[in-house]
Length: 182
Image (tube, rainbow, N blue to C red; front, side, top):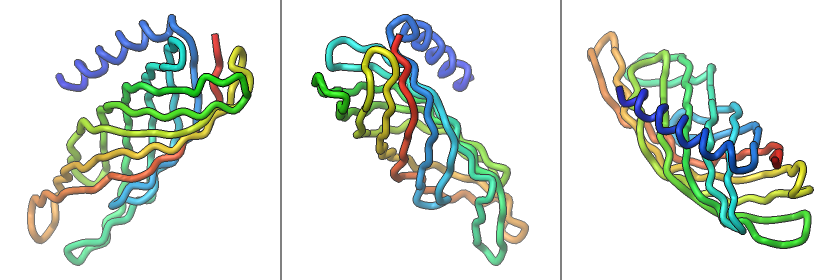
């Protein structure tokens, strides 16, 4: 039920923001503390009024080679994270092709794994980056994002039974891609 509610809100926001302005497509990497680095891509819808921008960002990141050692076993599994983030950015209003920005927001993180049951979580993020190019047609962008995220993982251990531990997914992500201005 919670996923349906979150996805419904995202679709309502996406339809509203799609009328407003920009579409970004990007590749991404996220260096998480416990599992390591996950890679993927995503898109962002942006509505902008002056130097302020409102963003809806959806990414999909996957690490199919995640290995975890514990309780005398080596576990191999796949970790998928789908961040759905809503935030604001302040973009420097300069006449130059290079326009830096900073911002942040709130996200809901859908997390799944072959290894065990992982809790989906709400969390915050902050970002800094820059656009480079023509603000009326196509820009290129690079940004660094820091996400504060921890979650619970419940695993079935052959010796100990069901065990729950905390996974620290905090860390920096880097996005790079293109912005199409409408």
